[in-house]
Image (cartoon, rainbow, N blue to C red; front, side):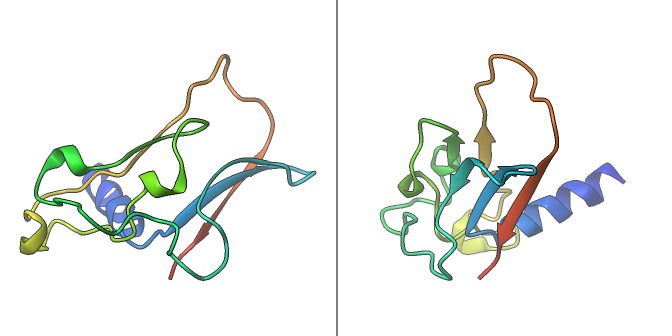
Length: 109
């Protein structure tokens, strides 16, 4: 079951041009990757060697910018990109565990 979940997450992540999380109920944005404008123009799309695992992005909330996220997110069946998993990581530096309710909003192009 864990493998199916991971595959689902990888498949879903391959379609995600942007992510953000909102606190509830006031809607204050806590973090965001990209802009909800039906475009992926803010993401990096050039000079990427997808076959090299060092190219897999690690987005650090509060430190990284939209240009640190890749526009194209290949899957493991894509031989032109190394035929491997391509983890896209989002890291948080938290002083303490979060409290309250949060909503994750995802847009797919």
